[in-house]
Amino acid sequence: MDHSIVSGATTAYSHRLTPGAEQFLMTLKSDGFPGWAYLTIEQARAMLGPVAPLAGEPERVSRVEDTHVPGNPEIPVRLYIPESLRPDLPMPVIVYFHGGGWVCGDYAYIDTPVRALANRSGCAVVSVNYRLAPEFKYPAALDDAYAALIWASQQGQRFGWDGSKLAVAGDSVGGGLAAAVALRSRDESGPAIAFQLLVYPVLDHDYSNESYRQFGSSWGILTRTDMIWFHSHYVSHPDQLDLPYVSPARWAHLEGLPEALVLVPEADPLRDEALLYVERLSAAGVRARSVVYPRVIHGFWQFGALMAEAHTAIDEAAASLRSCFSIPSSRASTGS
Image 1 (spheres, rainbow, N blue to C red):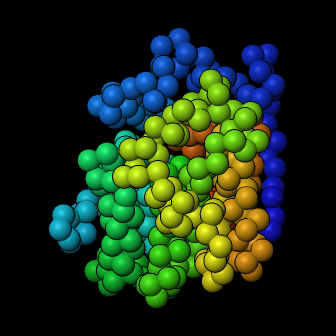
Image 2: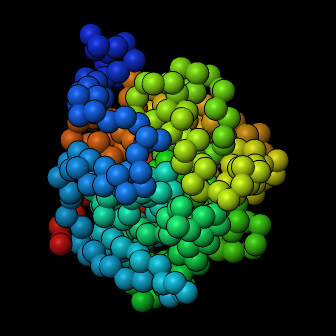
Image 3: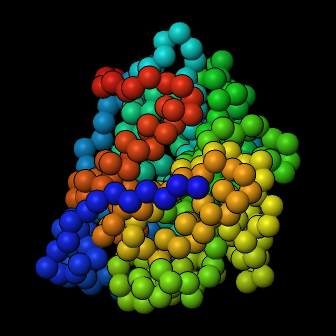
């Protein structure tokens, strides 16, 4: 187990915030954002449109294509095929799950970070539009995520990646889905996953831990009340929150899971459950590492125009993926 700390700056507003995080939260407050739990589903979904540009200018990727994973219903996915960093070999493939509390978001919202991840890692990415709650409760999102993993493992010849070199990734609830997909694939003898990238993942429902006490009241972009609201929409009954594919940090059997990199902001109520998961993976013999970014907030992965830590985190993730799959250092990609 390895916990790394990346240095950050303080501000006059709060010693817990970088200037970019301070700017974001002050703007959010001045705009009258009441918190996710005080919005309707439609209002919550509409919130993400104005936020998406804060990711910054999207990088060009050699090839981007929207298609569907066959099924009932079909699952929309967006494919990112970067310039190959190993022209002698088919590239690995990452199956990516967006955040949004299981209620909001899609592959368009997370497009900019995913483009950067594809280019810098040298891996293809399959970004998945899983079904959203509350219209489709657990296990709909997990079923879609797992179906996309199986599809990606089988489509290498068609799209030019190596379906036997698989990673899963996601941010926030997407990180939780990535962890759950890794568990399910192990449990059901599904496709072998080599790596899991979990960015401030939702892995538990312990609303009383230290990071919830520090940052879960009325502080920041995500509160305890918000997470209770999101969880209530995702599951049909509170008892389901204890299921291993809903709260992987509660599962007793973590042996045999893929290598994990967990990226977390310090000022996030989800911080401690993510760090606990790294400790539990390590205790189970899984190679696992976390990086904590001081004085940044939940969602920073998506805020590259305001927070340099977003670019640092994507570089960290890409380097770990390249190391896992023995890919040389990345170079600039050109394309569509």
